[in-house]
Amino acid sequence: MDISPEVLKRSIESLFRLQEIDAQLFQLNLEEKTIPPEYSEIQDKMAETLKAIKSIERSLRDVDRERRGFELRVLTLQEDLKKAEAKRRDVRNTKEEFAASKEHENFQKKLVETKKALTEKTELTTQKSQQLEEKQKAVKEFEEKFQGLDETRKSRMATLQAEKDKLIAQREAHISQVDEQIFSLYERVQRIRKGNGVALVQGLVCSGCHVSIPPHTRSRLEKMEEIITCPSCSRILYLHSEEIIEHKSFASTSAL
Image 1 (tube, rainbow, N blue to C red):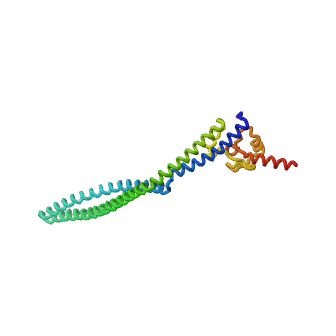
Image 2 (image 1 turned 135 degrees about the vertical axis):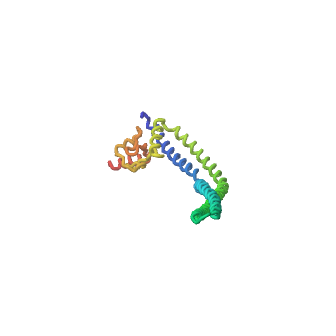
Image 3 (image 1 turned 180 degrees about the vertical axis):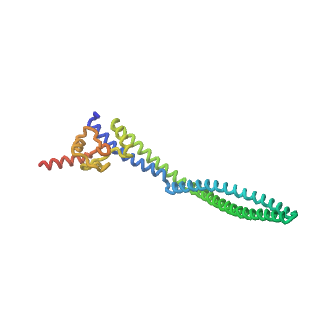
């Protein structure tokens, strides 16, 4: 890149401030999703409860269908039992009496078993209905809490939006001070590194990845004649003017 030292210095300093603004915007966006803290917690619990309600409703439909099936079966068996009793009264010999009694006994046994199953399904239906009622009651309580927290949320959201608008305006002002090629590089690195596209050099260490950089790379940074990126993390490297002066003073003293 053919960029003057003045433009390069101004661009990187603006990028460094831009990176700080982006970090603040990230935090504000994060807070936006969790204000007030109870709001998000209640939202999650309500989602879980609604999911549970759907599951209980499905289960309740299945159990109630089975219960109605057993009710119908009981009625059918009762009719069969009446017919078996009538048949027993009309027997003409011992063989017919034995067969009729056996049939009556089978129907009676099936009726007892079916009534027992019906009772179990009825009890289960009642339990499911109670569970459903409790979950529906919990949803209403969550809705009431939502209403109470809504005003607090709206107020804080308005404050956050005002802070974000101010930062966005500052961000645009800093972007206007950055060379387009440098800004394009910054955005690419920022996406890769998830937020940090510029890193300070402290001594001979990149503050972004904490890896040492070669001495000749620092020397190139001091000249401010080109964009220098970290050989390890690819962040745009930046050296504070104070550190350049301090380093040169130290080098002069050492030469003496």
